[in-house]
Structures are given as structure tokens and as C-alpha cells.
Image 1: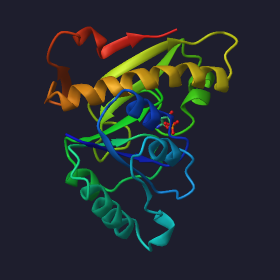
Image 2: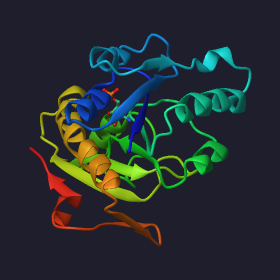
Image 3: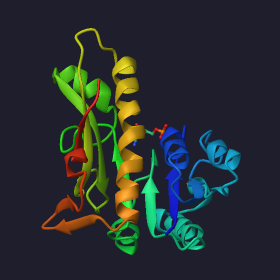
Image 4: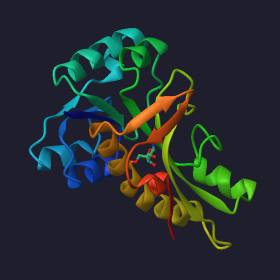
Amino acid sequence: MSVVVLISGRGSNLRALIEAGLPVRAAISNEPGAPGLAHAAAAGIPARAVAHRDFATREAFEAALARAVDEYAPRLVALAGFMRVLTAGFVARYAGRLMNIHPSLLPAFPGLDTHRRALAAGVKVHGCTVHFVTAELDRGPIIVQAAVAVRPDDTEETLAARVLREEHRIYPLAVRWFLEDRLELADGVVRVRGGDAQAYFACGA
Ligand code: GRF
């Protein structure tokens, strides 16, 4: 019933998953210096690095990463600010049990710099998405989203901070649903079995 979390940096979503009491068995970073590894270490959870720079090819890096992940035989692999693009091979290995959190209301703004791009586009509602990972970047089946209103005086930083608060709320929710076997995927659409289906969509500040 365990979860392995892959990170690259700050690790605030990793911390949110740990603090929600979810069974995080290990945190693995492709950046050995990722500050977020400290959140796992502080909770007595193995915190490891598999440095992509140590490998000549993406495939060799991913093979080492998969070996490290599989040591914990996780039910779910949760990407939380993991900044390496994964090959179709890696995604297929964890098909249906690989999740990601993305800081936009997908399918809007896949990729990087989502908050800056949302402000530049003048959208009035922004937010975050937890989705299953497929080979196509930031395009997998959506599990849960949270929206925040964009304020006229928002900067990239203020908007990012409000979205991040929602990320910390919805990622634990999605992981819990998965571990409780409540996520049902049909034709690329996720349904949540059980009572709180209205929580697919959550409206923040
Ligand atoms: C978050 O905004 C997440 O949505 C994105 O990368 C950021 C990671 O933040 N994928 P943190 O490392 O969890 O603090």
C-alpha cells in the first residue's frame, strides 16, 4: 500500500503527502542537493538521490531510477515537482499507478512557467491539477483540480503561492483515493467512487 515520491527541488508537495499521514516509503530525487529530501529525512523516511547527470543516456538514468523505486515495491509512484521528462518506456512500466501534480488547470498551460503564462493570457481562473501520467507531457487523465481566482494585482509569486496552497490540499486527496481503490478510469476519464465526488473540483481563495 505504499507510495514512492519523486522530486527535484523544494518538496513542499512531498511534505504535504507526509503530513497527511499517507504511507510514503521513500523520496527519490534526480538532484542530489534537492532541499525537499530533508522533509523525508525529518520524518524518518528514506531520502535518496539518483542523479541523472551520472548517466550517459535518459534510458540508463531511468533504469537506475526504476531499480531504486522498485526496491520499495510501491503501489503508487507520485511525481511531485520532478523535473525530468520521462520516456514512454518508464511511463508504461508504471502505467495506471504514476501520478503527477501540475500547477495549472490542465489542459490549459502544460509545461513550464504556468503562472507567468496564465497572467500573460489574462485568465481569470487558474489552479492546479492532479492527473495520471501518460507518455504525452501533462496530458494524462485528470483526477482532481482546484481553482483559484486571479486577482488584478496578482504577481507570478502571489498567484503561485495561492495555487500551491491548493496543491497541498488536492494531492493528498488524490493519493488517498487511489490507495482506497476509488479511482476508476474509463475512456481517459477518471471517476471517483464514493461520497465526496464533488471534491473533483475544489474552489480555493
Ligand atoms: C509544484 O508547483 C508542482 O505543481 C510542480 O512543481 C512544483 C513543485 O513544488 N510540478 P514542490 O517541490 O512540491 O514544493
